[in-house]
Amino acid sequence: QTILIDLWLCASDLQIPKLQNLALNELDRIRNATGQMNIQALMHVYEHAPEGSLLRQYMVWQYANRLSEDAIPRALEFYPKVFMLDWIVMLTQMSECPTAIFLHHKYLVGMQLKAPSCPQTVLFGYGAYRRQRRPLKAQHPSPKSQLAASVSNL
Image 1 (cartoon, rainbow, N blue to C red):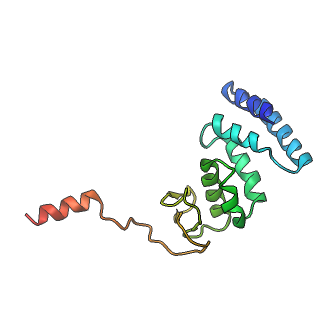
Image 2: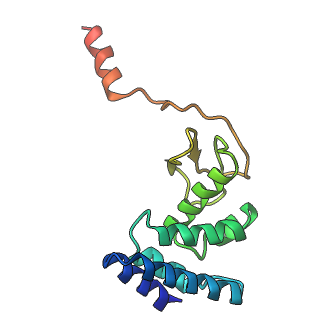
Image 3: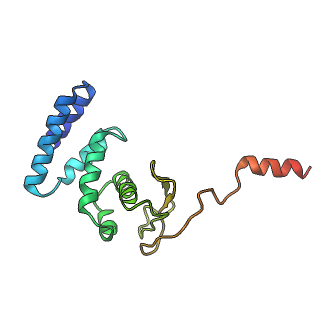
């Protein structure tokens, strides 16, 4: 699978979309035959494919359809953190943009990101999975508003 990933990356660099499609079709055929995507292939994609590439999106899509939200704590032990963030964003988009997803894992605590097609914020923190409404605006005053407040106090 990593050879096909290298072929896809090379075709991407050389701007040969037909070769990219052939490599991805073969990768998908192998995944269908074996029933899973090789973890080394996933690691290889995240080491070499640029952020936002179609190959990364394909890998995330394969796992988004296979893994459940209950598998997140165990999956965090094996998968790259960047992949898990991409995967959670995709799950969030697939589940009609819940306002927040809380995960019980120390490596994701404090991380906050916004899905491109979702106006709500995805927040990672300790606790059981639950949904909670979060304001879209930051809780902390911006430096600009702090400056305005200090100027008005003069």
